[in-house]
Amino acid sequence: MRHARRRVVRRVTRLAAVGGLLLGGTMVTHAVASEPGTPDAVPFSTASPPDAHASGPGADVVQRLGTSRTAGSWVGEDGRTVVAVTDEEAAAEVRAAGAEPRMVRHSMDDFDSATRTLSSAPRVPGTAWMKDYRSNQVVVRADSTVSEDDWSSLTEVADGIGDFVTMERVGGTFTTRLAGGLPVLSTAGRCSAGFNVTDGRREFILTAGHCGPQGSVWFSDDGGRKKVGTTVGGSFPGDDYSLIAYEGGKAGENAGVVAVGGGKGVRITGVADPTVGQRIFRSGSTSGLRDGEVTALDVTVNYPEGTVGGLIESDVCAEPGDSGGPMFSEGVALGVTSGGSGDCRSGGITYFQPLTKALADLDLKLIVAPGADGGSPSPEPSQGQGVAAPDAATPGSSTSVRGILPDPSTLVSRLADPRNVGPGLLVMGGSLVALVASRWIRAEQDRKAYRRQYSEMWG
Image (cartoon, rainbow, N blue to C red; front, side, top):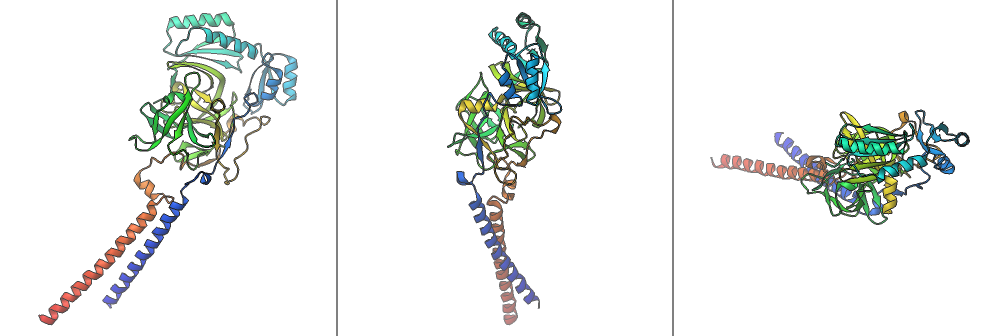
């Protein structure tokens, strides 16, 4: 009876082992077949930057009224568009367009004249200036590195412009954030991947220009074994963007998704320019996902490495290593992290390179993700619709970040990934071990039985 049970156990083990081999082979075949081997297998489309002269809520009426009668627009706390105007006739047109007018003394022409004068003065690293639409002032800031002599000289320039130019001292220093977004590393330091873009043939990471000069080689791991790509162009100073060409020419699946930490990502569905007062989100490899509000546009910052103009200013925090990380809202791409002051413990100011400017200069298109149901990406908000009220704004539709960059995970997690060949190989290996073991156990039992029989026959 005991021998019969043993035979049953051996047969069941052999059958299970053979079944495991077949199952493991099927898993490996399926995993290999499902790898995105061609561009056609990658689910994304592209988005072009909008007309630079027709972006943001209120842009149409501002363009129609002109820079001599308006002084910018922004999003109010209730989500309505507010437009600064200099006369009652312009205010009536703003009301007719469905926006809220705000009477001010100084026009955009005054702002532009003031910033040109500031730009023509001797350059002082650690300073920045911005057009504050809501206060109808040009604000000049200086960080802790600016000497009293330089501060006095800049104050004299500001006084000569007019009383609508105000001076502010800020703590910390205005620096680029080189140490978004998944980390990319090179000999130049650590930055964050921004957005994936394409010229129709090859695909690239668009990140900050100060992250590294042309020819910089980037990796997704500290050991320099997993190469991401090479910097092939960009602009810094002046602007702050650069392109990393993917090593294999393609970004892979989920190219239209940006990482926000915790294995999660946000689908990017379009590209636009932000609006003052808009709630935005920023992701970086150092500090993860953070949110804040756009406080100014067309900002000039005098970094130690050089002057960068046309930046977006926000009260969101950032830290070294966040450079190049994506800035977005409601799934719409807005910019990449440039620099700023402060940190995410005490707060600070962060500046972003507008994405529309970089795409237009480089003649590239943004890679965007399909919708949550796998269909076409969500349409970009029309300019007439405006943006969500600050309290109601969200990052966008969430998804997994798998496939954004070469996976820097551990061997165990890669083997556990059901979309890789690892699980199938593990099943096949275990089945082979079970099959060999069952054969060895049977042979060993037969040998012992033969010895017992032989001993009984011959004493």
